[in-house]
Image (cartoon, rainbow, N blue to C red; front, side):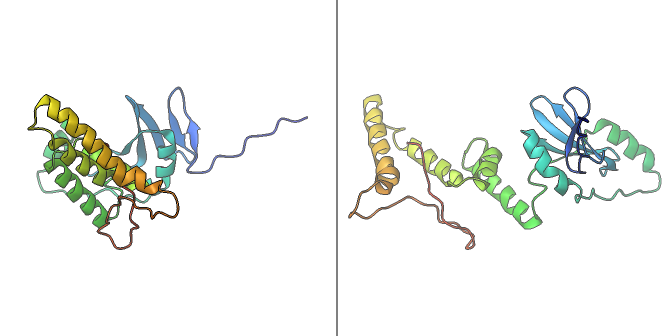
Length: 214
């Protein structure tokens, strides 16, 4: 029986190209790994500094695969030239690393502005890893940003108490959070149910449950 030939890869498929490396089916994109992250290198376009146009980072190859189609539509900034500036631009680009297109850059302009404003506000509120939190929040069924803000305020409540009082307050706070979140959802008939939810500013977005950690 003749060996069945493998189907020709599509332009957005990932094709192995040596140990630890991949390329797109049409050869336009090279997929490279640095540390534990993946990057898409566009071999047909350069960035505004004349260097490789790089997209990423991505945590998994599945994220790379999903991002290849959109990477075809990203246009680099136009390069400008001035009399006598060519040599300076070349020297500067040799020292400057290639600009990596982040997940925020790939959003529509108005969404990107909102995300940057939110990250800035969370940084100002002392929330750790604000950019990571916002990215997870966008795809989560739970309101992670709201939960983080509540957690931060809850932690401040026992800060001025003695050690014995802090332990008592922590137990009390934990129980209050359980009442607001878990107890209401699990209430049996004929009792009504209740739930702590986010009030979205965007009227087109549905409320999501908030699950803060006490």
